[in-house]
Image 1 (tube, rainbow, N blue to C red):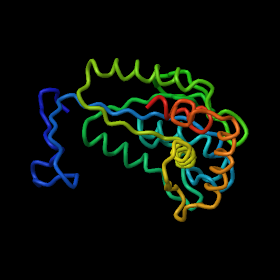
Image 2 (image 1 turned 60 degrees about the horizontal axis):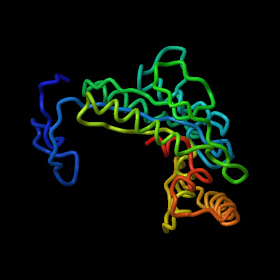
Image 3 (image 1 turned 90 degrees about the horizontal axis):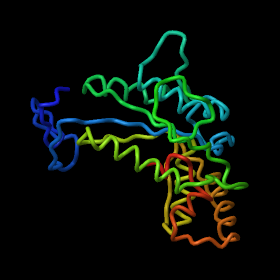
Image 4 (image 1 turned 135 degrees about the vertical axis):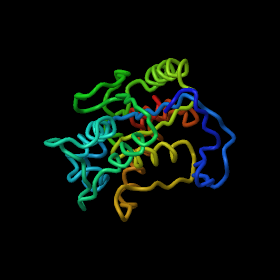
Length: 234
């Protein structure tokens, strides 16, 4: 995508139609796309996530999705699939960025498996199962590092397209939102959401938070007990 070409309202000039329900009054010449990836050990709990053929496979999914988005499918390389055999939507994302002429970047927020592709590392740790342990050790530190990375990107990009991949992330999101006082529900990678299991996990996490007596208006404290490494970075 040429730097001197302006894009207004995300419209397709040939069709004259908008990708959104309402036009966005925005012009940009240097778009950038980034994917923040990480792991939560909640995804290894049976029935929580379909972002892998087995619960154990979900711990590889962020790496595989990132590699797909960066390089596309390669012979001999694994492509993440759901228990029903559905291929990761990262394949579509790779094709979309190719059509737009955008070279995406990846941020490692905290992975189980060391990445084998070029990425920005904020040196986070894997999110632990919040039913039994702190989900994150220091979300404030991850936040500061995320701000630093974003500030660097802002020196040469005027539009940031931001994505994420954290298997089990809808469950950690549910825990965080409810802990903050929202009457929330969350989606799922399964065709039928395992609502009962999500609520069971969430109730256990909320009990730990109540027992600890933390300030639930402090988002960082809530993320420490219930979040995943992607959250404070983004």
